[in-house]
Length: 302
Image 1: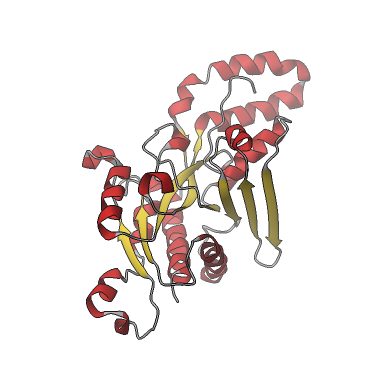
Image 2: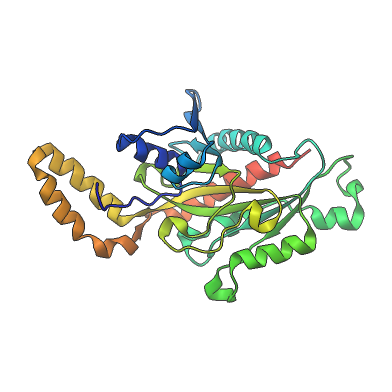
């Protein structure tokens, strides 16, 4: 695998890649929990040291991954089970949930590109409460405690001429939320995780990093408030798919095929800027956006 760089936004896959290379990794705690009834697997990866963060290429922090094989299928009862589990994980990772807090949910991505429209779709269906609480107080909801929820869809720099991080920082400074939750589409290494995995992390997010399009980071350090990131892999690097197929075929033929494999891999340069998604991505994005939106509404309901 020399010279071949695997791109992924998922900490779980980054850890798997290190295990495959037989590289020793310390300072990483992994906890897995599988529910046989719902077939939902929850993996918690905690990166604790600077060395492990460097090896994995991910910041120090907690990464929670929910994997559900039928996540994108039209099954409302199953979606409810996934959103319930996601809501539990969000309540645990969002700071200050026991008290009243102000939460700004940011939908990252380009709504005109189907595979990148997850964030805007989530915010479109979110229950927004900040304006009601500001105008009428908690009596508007008949409750003694209400989390104030606001939403923002900053678009992309090609349309606005501004960095997404700049827009978010400006709104944060003006509205002063206690927590920012960003929702974005991610890139995965494995096709089996496309639209079937949700990652939640308290490290913030680096928009476009999974597809080699690096933008300013959206983190606690840059915004001054805790940043929780929710992401779903919607694309896979085309070169990764071809490389995996080559490995399976050549290794099944003979071990001497390594040299041929290197030659073929070197000829894949033009694939490094190509990304692949499923043919039903428009429908699947809509389904998953409702799951995340439902989970956020449940988590932010006192």
